Image 1: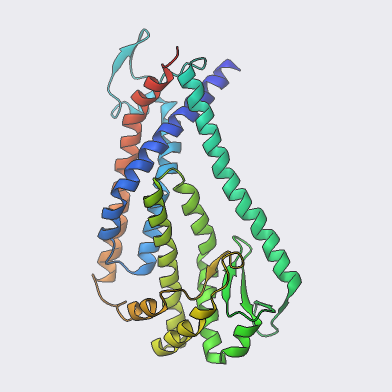
Image 2: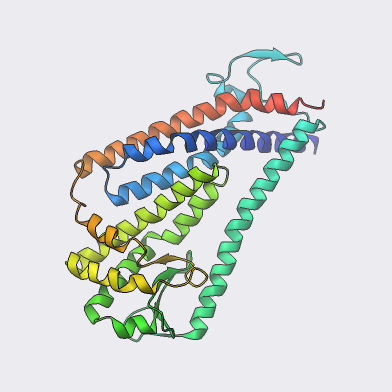
Amino acid sequence: MNDFAGHAALLTSVWLVATVVTSLLSAALYPLFRRSIGGSDPSTRSLATLGYALISPAAGIVTALVSLSPYAAQLLIPEHCHAGICGSHAPLVAGGSLGGIGLVVAASLIAFAAGAVAIRAIVYGGRRLRFLYALSRRSRVREHLIVDSDHLFAWCCGLVRQQVVLSRALVERLSAAELDVVLAHERAHLARFDNLRNLAGRCATMMWPPAAKARIRSDLVADSERVCDLAAIRACRSQRLFRQVVETMTPGRPHASLAKGATFGGDDAAARAEALSEAGTGWPRRWSRLTAFTLLALIWVLQLATAAFLSHPVVEAIASLGV
């Protein structure tokens, strides 16, 4: 039991320090990373940005596991001696010290908060979807729900069990061709599991500074919208028709408390429509994709190495407080 408690204290302490270190470093480097992949297509930017957001929790988990096998990280952790131990060794965490207790408690609270965010999204998402099923009617032609509302809205709700929801006013106002544009956009959200992606991004960046956190989350949403916009344009084969639909729906955006998911339309309707005409500019797609994912892989390796290098001395320094 003592060995188990010691391993648990070590794992949680190293995970916390490594995650905090990589969160701060990721936040600092994110503007440069974002500019570097700016020439990529929206799908590549979306996936690369999500991969970037996941660096911090991944680095924390990998570093914690490596700490149990010190020889695996001996190239990254300088040899040193203390407490009668020399050479490669796992970080020393005194379970009875104030610093060690503080690390374990802080790591437990953060893990609980991340779990609570995910569980809340799953539970409330399921309740909302069941509520919509009860209040709506299913289209006989298409697999979507129609909610009796005078507002113009369409969104993809749910995480794993997803559903496209449309308002009655929207179905009555748009022509068949315009409605096909909206459905193509929302079905693209379904195929990409964008709500689940955004939830993963929110949980993975919990320990980022507020400004950087808000920026990457906004970029994740913007990229997913751009990808789905392009899917809608390919479906209708007309940028004019797409622009017309976006401009029609913008005044009727659903209230924030109603649309908890990927929605069609936005305050930047004109900018979105104009930006789509620039989809073919920038680097060749093949090279931009190769550049984006090569850069992402390089940052992952450097972040993992930095987490392993810094977490050992930082954990031991904090855990030695109050011994």
